[in-house]
Every structure is written in structure tokens, then in C-alpha cells.
Amino acid sequence: MTFIPQSRISVGAGIIAELNQYGPDDGCATANPILSTSVPTTMSDFIETNTNDDGIDRRGFLKCMAWAGTGVIWSINGGLLTSTVLGQEANNRGAIATAEMNFVQISDSHIGFNKPANTDVVGTFRETIMHINALPKVPEFLLHTGDLTHLSDPGQFDTLAQVLKECKTTDVFYVPGEHDIYDGGAQYRERFGKNTTGAGWHSFDQKGIHFIGLVNVANIQEGGLGTLGQEQIDWLEKDVKGLSTSTPIVLFAHIPLWAVYPKWGWGTDDAERALSFVKRFGSVTVLNGHIHQVMQKVEGNITFHTARGTAFPLPAPGSVPKPLPVVVEAPQLKKMLGLTSVNYTETNHTLAVVDTTLG
Picture (cartoon, rainbow, N blue to C red):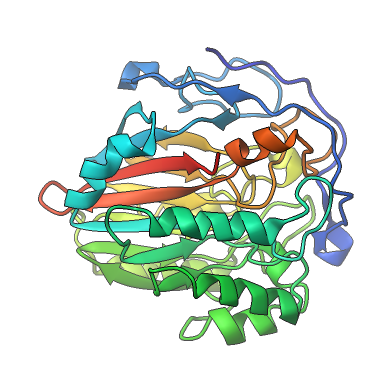
């Protein structure tokens, strides 16, 4: 499978720059996101040059990937990305059970959304929790990469917290999405951002891995791209300054820290400055949400991974004028939603990233 060229679109991103927020969606965009089949890969399977003049930088993408992917086991070792096909979740039970550490990324639960693309986002979020509880080994913690809610409503935050109580894993680390800070982020920080800095950035260590949660939605600028800001970048430089280059690094933020599709605001304008501080490390993994589909890219020692949401799919970049929720047939919906499970083997500093659908 090769990339399907996308036409250039002159329509702006779905962000209202003057209001520093996303405009409302109608939840009923019509598009056909591309599902891909995945095959074992080597470094020669990565695209090295960008030949399409459509605003999408494909360098580092897998040649066999489309814009939405089926599950693949991703392993990071010495900054290199390798993969094997993920068939059924049962095929990976041994790796999960024997790993030194497991954690799960969930993203874009959009509690409060109730449009044709998914009229029961609480149900699909609850089903995600059931999948986590069914893992052969309870994950040490969860990462939620933003858009916990759809409208930053107190009741929506309440519902999310209540459903999370059903999870066997009790420790959850968050970063906000733009839908979580319509009130300026006060409720989010009070309920989910305690002991964080600034708009909610923070770091912690687990089993020799240094995790860094960044916030790139607090100051969305004209053009719609995410932004970190000087204060947070200065904090990041200090945060990693004393770490050994052999320390595995995991960065997580809502909007991708690479230019997926800038015309839709799918990128972060000052990400390169932030990433310059982690390029010296041998293994760097970047986990993002926001685009509601699996995309992976490798640049040197940095591997980028975006996750499916648990609420609704979004269209392939550039395939329609705006990134509105996509309506698909009910049996297909759960195949386009899911979670990301990561296990770690301490002896060889390997991270394996596994995407699982709900269907």
C-alpha cells in the first residue's frame, strides 16, 4: 500500500483564530477515512524524501501506511523504530505480562459530544476502560492526551472522573486538549492538573523512563497551530538538563509535535525548539492525540505516534475542507476508535507501542 495523494485545500483550519478556539462542529461530516493493512517493516520502508506538493511532509512515514491504521506493535530500541503486525490482542499477552512496565494512552474521549458521529461517547469510553481491565497485567498508569470533555462543562468532567473509577488502574496523568479549556482551563487545572506548572505541564519518572507532559493548546495563535510558549520551553530545557543521554524519554501532548497537516492546525509551531532539547537522548517517544487516527513517523532518534480517540473518527488530512467528525456505519465505528498500550523492558530499554481498536 502506498500513500494516496491528497489535493491541495485552500480552506483554513477549523480554528477561529480571533477567539483562540475551535469553531462548533455539526458532527456529521461525510468522508471515508482510509483504513490500512500493516506489514513488518525495516528502516528501508520509511519515506526519505517528500515528492508531493500538497502541504503534507511525509518524510519518515511508513511507505505502507495510510492515514488511519490497524494495530501494529511498535518497538523503540536505540532510537530506531521496528514493528510487527498486530493481529489479535491475544498475540501480545505474553509481551504485556512479562514487561517491566505497562502503561496505556487514551485520548479524545470528548465526554458531552452527542452528534451522529457517536451518540454514546460515554459508552465507547467505558468500553475502552473494559479493554484496559481485560489486559493480562494491570497497567501501572494511564496517560490521557487531552480533550477529556467536549465543552469543558463541569458535568462532563464529573462523568469522565466517574467512568475512570471503573478502571483497575488508578493512576492517571493528563494534559488538556483545546476542548478542556473553554473557560481558560481553571476547572481542568483544579481537577486534573494539580501539582503541575503553568497551564498544566509536568514531568515524572517511572522505571527509569522520564515522562514529560506538555500543553500546546493554551495559546493557539493565528493559523490554528498549537503552541508551547517560551515559559514552557524554558521549563523543558531545565527539566531534561541533568538527565543522562541513556534515559528513555516519553513526551506527551494533545496536538501533534510534528507537522501532520498545518492547514488544519495539526501541528505545533514551536515544536522544533522543544524537541531540540531531547535530540541528544538515545530513545525519544512522542505520544499525541487530537487527530483521532493512528499516524507514526520517525526522525532520527525520535518516534512520533498519534492515537485514535475513543469518541469519533476524523477525516484523513486534506481529504475534506474541514476536520469535522466523520459519520460511519455503526459496525465500523468501533474499528476506528481505540487505545494505545505501551510496555517496557528495563533490561534493554525497549518500548513497544501497541494500538488496539474497540471493534
